[in-house]
Length: 130
Image (tube, rainbow, N blue to C red; front, side, top):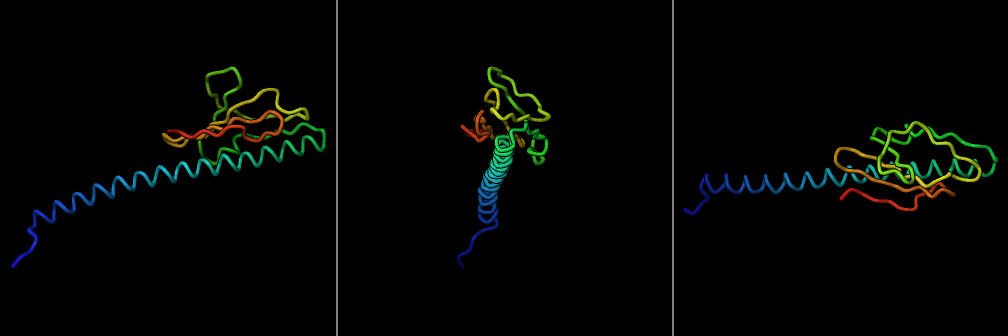
Protein backbone atom coordinates (compact mmCIF):
# COMPACT_ATOMS: atom_id res chain seq x y z
CA UNK A 1 0.00 0.00 0.00
CA UNK A 2 1.13 3.49 -0.78
CA UNK A 3 0.79 6.01 2.05
CA UNK A 4 2.56 8.96 3.60
CA UNK A 5 5.00 8.28 6.39
CA UNK A 6 4.78 10.01 9.76
CA UNK A 7 7.92 12.00 8.96
CA UNK A 8 6.42 13.32 5.71
CA UNK A 9 3.25 14.40 7.56
CA UNK A 10 5.29 16.20 10.23
CA UNK A 11 7.30 18.06 7.58
CA UNK A 12 4.11 19.16 5.78
CA UNK A 13 2.55 20.33 9.06
CA UNK A 14 5.70 22.26 9.98
CA UNK A 15 5.75 24.05 6.61
CA UNK A 16 2.02 24.82 6.84
CA UNK A 17 2.47 26.21 10.37
CA UNK A 18 5.29 28.45 9.19
CA UNK A 19 3.23 29.84 6.31
CA UNK A 20 0.22 30.46 8.58
CA UNK A 21 2.42 32.19 11.17
CA UNK A 22 3.88 34.56 8.59
CA UNK A 23 0.40 35.30 7.22
CA UNK A 24 -1.06 35.96 10.67
CA UNK A 25 1.72 38.47 11.44
CA UNK A 26 1.06 40.34 8.20
CA UNK A 27 -2.69 40.45 8.87
CA UNK A 28 -2.10 41.80 12.40
CA UNK A 29 0.17 44.55 11.07
CA UNK A 30 -2.40 45.55 8.44
CA UNK A 31 -5.12 45.62 11.10
CA UNK A 32 -3.05 47.94 13.33
CA UNK A 33 -2.28 50.25 10.39
CA UNK A 34 -5.96 50.34 9.41
CA UNK A 35 -6.92 51.22 13.01
CA UNK A 36 -4.36 54.05 13.09
CA UNK A 37 -5.68 55.43 9.78
CA UNK A 38 -9.23 55.31 11.13
CA UNK A 39 -8.17 57.19 14.27
CA UNK A 40 -6.32 59.79 12.18
CA UNK A 41 -9.32 60.40 9.92
CA UNK A 42 -11.62 60.70 12.93
CA UNK A 43 -9.22 63.28 14.43
CA UNK A 44 -9.23 65.19 11.14
CA UNK A 45 -13.03 65.31 11.24
CA UNK A 46 -13.03 66.62 14.83
CA UNK A 47 -10.37 69.26 14.07
CA UNK A 48 -12.13 70.45 10.93
CA UNK A 49 -15.44 70.76 12.83
CA UNK A 50 -13.71 72.75 15.56
CA UNK A 51 -12.12 75.03 12.94
CA UNK A 52 -15.52 75.53 11.31
CA UNK A 53 -17.01 76.51 14.70
CA UNK A 54 -14.07 78.87 15.23
CA UNK A 55 -14.65 80.59 11.90
CA UNK A 56 -18.44 80.83 12.21
CA UNK A 57 -18.49 82.05 15.83
CA UNK A 58 -15.22 84.04 15.63
CA UNK A 59 -14.35 82.46 18.98
CA UNK A 60 -11.26 80.36 19.68
CA UNK A 61 -11.87 76.63 20.22
CA UNK A 62 -9.86 74.39 22.52
CA UNK A 63 -9.42 70.77 21.39
CA UNK A 64 -8.15 68.25 23.93
CA UNK A 65 -5.68 66.17 21.94
CA UNK A 66 -5.79 63.29 24.42
CA UNK A 67 -9.34 62.60 23.22
CA UNK A 68 -8.02 62.22 19.66
CA UNK A 69 -5.57 59.46 20.56
CA UNK A 70 -8.23 56.78 21.21
CA UNK A 71 -5.83 54.62 23.19
CA UNK A 72 -2.86 55.10 20.87
CA UNK A 73 0.24 57.15 21.58
CA UNK A 74 -0.25 60.66 20.14
CA UNK A 75 2.66 63.06 19.70
CA UNK A 76 3.00 66.44 17.97
CA UNK A 77 5.86 68.05 16.03
CA UNK A 78 5.69 71.80 15.49
CA UNK A 79 7.04 73.45 12.34
CA UNK A 80 10.81 73.86 12.49
CA UNK A 81 11.25 71.16 15.13
CA UNK A 82 12.66 67.68 14.58
CA UNK A 83 11.25 66.07 17.72
CA UNK A 84 7.77 64.88 18.57
CA UNK A 85 6.41 65.86 22.00
CA UNK A 86 3.36 64.74 23.97
CA UNK A 87 0.63 67.37 23.58
CA UNK A 88 -2.17 68.38 25.91
CA UNK A 89 -4.47 70.56 23.85
CA UNK A 90 -4.68 72.61 20.67
CA UNK A 91 -6.15 76.09 20.49
CA UNK A 92 -7.77 76.99 17.19
CA UNK A 93 -8.08 80.71 16.43
CA UNK A 94 -10.35 82.43 13.87
CA UNK A 95 -7.33 83.20 11.66
CA UNK A 96 -6.22 79.57 11.65
CA UNK A 97 -3.26 77.83 13.25
CA UNK A 98 -0.12 79.93 13.43
CA UNK A 99 2.02 77.21 11.92
CA UNK A 100 1.61 73.80 10.37
CA UNK A 101 2.10 70.91 12.76
CA UNK A 102 2.37 67.18 12.42
CA UNK A 103 0.37 64.76 14.55
CA UNK A 104 1.66 61.19 14.91
CA UNK A 105 -0.36 58.24 16.20
CA UNK A 106 1.68 55.19 17.17
CA UNK A 107 0.76 51.67 18.16
CA UNK A 108 3.63 49.27 18.61
CA UNK A 109 6.04 49.66 15.70
CA UNK A 110 3.36 51.10 13.39
CA UNK A 111 2.63 54.82 13.09
CA UNK A 112 0.65 57.28 11.01
CA UNK A 113 1.66 60.96 10.69
CA UNK A 114 -0.60 63.73 9.45
CA UNK A 115 0.47 67.30 8.70
CA UNK A 116 -2.30 69.79 9.46
CA UNK A 117 -3.22 72.59 7.07
CA UNK A 118 -3.00 75.80 9.17
CA UNK A 119 -6.16 77.32 7.63
CA UNK A 120 -8.59 74.40 7.52
CA UNK A 121 -7.18 72.03 10.20
CA UNK A 122 -7.50 69.29 7.58
CA UNK A 123 -4.62 67.04 6.56
CA UNK A 124 -2.19 68.22 3.91
CA UNK A 125 -0.09 65.07 4.05
CA UNK A 126 -0.65 61.62 5.47
CA UNK A 127 2.31 59.28 5.94
CA UNK A 128 2.40 55.69 7.21
CA UNK A 129 5.22 53.66 8.72
CA UNK A 130 7.15 51.61 6.17
